[in-house]
Image (cartoon, rainbow, N blue to C red; front, side, top):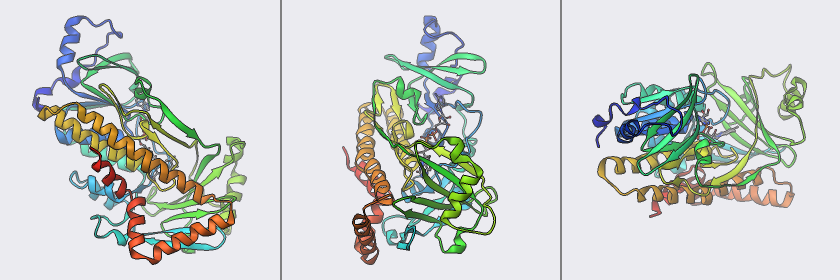
Length: 430
Ligand SMILES: Cc1cc2nc3c(=O)[nH]c(=O)nc-3n(C[C@H](O)[C@H](O)[C@H](O)COP(=O)(O)OP(=O)(O)OC[C@H]3O[C@@H](n4cnc5c(N)ncnc54)[C@H](O)[C@@H]3O)c2cc1C
């Protein structure tokens, strides 16, 4: 069925309570084909745009009233820039974001350990750099691109409460300001984050672990670049490691984010206390007078992967499918890669009559690399940055120095941390 045949699909909201629909209504809804998406974060919006580009009608539900602006993802890796080229999203990200051609691995006391230049990837990707752009700005770019397409609706303040499936499709029960409604679709994609309701409606587990400490994110306009820091810095320390990044911020002139570990026994009030924040940030870099602080946010950090990304017509992508610590800037990128993989397969099923077995292939490809690559790399990144054993720490630093001295080792290392290896591995799974 082509897109033109689905024009009325998105009018299928029904105010009837769950399971009280008469057969006629149910029949009509079953024949109306669209895809439902739960969650309008970056992965939900990317999934929406990908479906729109393929010509597949959809409804996107978001529990919030607008795009959240908390300081989470800021790093966009080369494969993501390649994937978004055709839609013009990459150009928009390059226009708004900062291009990062090198980044530092540092020791908090002794300074630069290794300076990684992504130019070493010039024969591997059209974008041998990272882009720094806040995730809410990417979401906005995606939402703006969607304005050029018909055949869809985006419903804010619509919280997916649960989803049930039958032989013909799925029924989502959605809480709205006007009360509960049911929506029908051929598939439901859960892009609704770590606490995904879609995942909870599926027969899957979300095994893994939660770190005892939380991550504290502070932001300031103070220019750390004047002290020799790169736009991206990972700063190892046995007592208080940190990560320091510059994102464009409110005016495009820059906002520096610092991410510190926060002791699990400390209360939010203690961690957010102005004096304690000033002490912590000045302990990292002293300056005359207090820092101007724009964000103080606290995140619980987990390492978990869903036991399957597919249960019949219910599918998972992004944080709903896998969550990890942010060191390396990979979680959102990985979720966006899920989205491209999944929507390409859905388009083959939708328009070419391909087998739904493709959805199992999606699960195999993306879940395998989430385990082998995303989880392994981010767990390793945290272990290295907080290494307490001086001999282990020195060995790790020596490995990093050796990588930067040897062009082949550097290429191989950067292929992994720039997420190119993960994509190649995913595509190799049949
Ligand atoms: C401090 C920090 C820094 C990070 N830095 C990076 C980075 O540099 N690079 C990177 O790649 N990743 C990074 N990440 C990870 C990144 O933020 C996440 O991977 C990303 O937000 C996942 O996007 P998502 O769309 O899957 O989920 P989310 O961003 O969590 O979006 C889910 C959406 O679903 C909505 N929702 C939830 N439940 C429902 C429901 N029942 N019904 C309807 N809507 C619902 C939510 O309101 C939300 O809008 C970082 C994370 C943290 C905490």
